[in-house]
Amino acid sequence: MEKLNLAKNILMTRILSQNACEEFNKKANKKSLFQASERVLFLIEQYSSVSPSVLIEKLYIAKSNLAPICKQLLNEELIKVRQDTIDKRIIYYSLTEKGKEHLKARLEAIGNSVIECCPEGAEELNRNLEEINQVLSKKF
Image 1 (tube, helix red, strand yellow):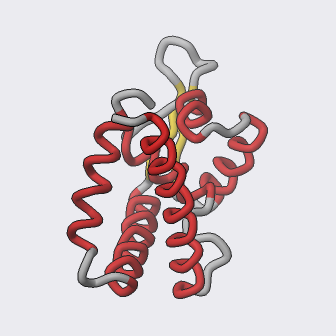
Image 2 (cartoon, rainbow, N blue to C red):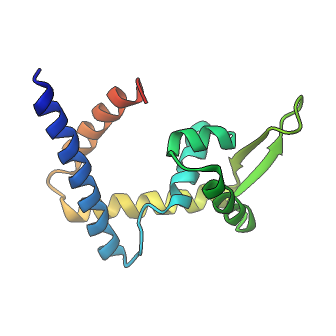
């Protein structure tokens, strides 16, 4: 495999993904389809219970940026917080039922936008994205 082509494909995937997200934003009349708060909710769902340090690591955001997002999600009752049983300084976030419903609705809206945008290629796109995610998740 040629390293240059690999780098070009990764860069093009990033650009096209960003363009697709922007197109979905227009269709949904949203400022940002994948807002930071939605990415936080998604990762909390993936881990079921997750510490702020894991969110910071996975989202590549500063603690000072994560704190207000989590505060907002707590105020909206989309997430809940619990302390570690041994070390009370450690906290974990998990989704509330309201948070699960909110995330499900957002993911369905995103899925509908993708299908509407490219109905003939949605299944193939999903398979390819699953493969990409499998490969990348081994390292990142």
